[in-house]
Image (cartoon, rainbow, N blue to C red):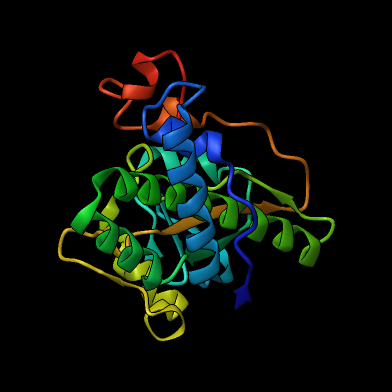
Length: 221
């Protein structure tokens, strides 16, 4: 398990999640700065991971007994012989901060939520740097999470089981396959001993691409 500090959060990214202009007014910037300080002071980011061999039999793809369904994940892992399965969380404290802020101040709650979203992505990026250090001479795909393309969210319970994430992170999943704490991420990274071609990612694999507010504004998430 990795225990990682939450480093300074990219506040411009958080403001973009909030749908704010590039230059927010002083009052909003003060709210964001205050929320960032509280979030960094309170949360306890942690990551668990496991490397699993990929099994291809009778047209199916699996790892650790978990069947990886869908054409998108098959393409993502096509040149890989193993994968790194990971789960990351900012901890339940992030959810508590967002909830408490929403009781009295929706702007503060929105800022806290956006900062936490940006923060968990930064934690995942930092974890990936650690993986690369621990697995030298290994080539990595980008992170592919349930809900991307046609990889179903229904895989979440099996991912948590394989990682023992409930015991190690306190991470659970609802009947609707939503992770709790909410500011948590699971992902699959393909691994190989040779250079990998760059595959489609981002908007190309997102099921929300036709209705995404970021795409309508000419940007991306």
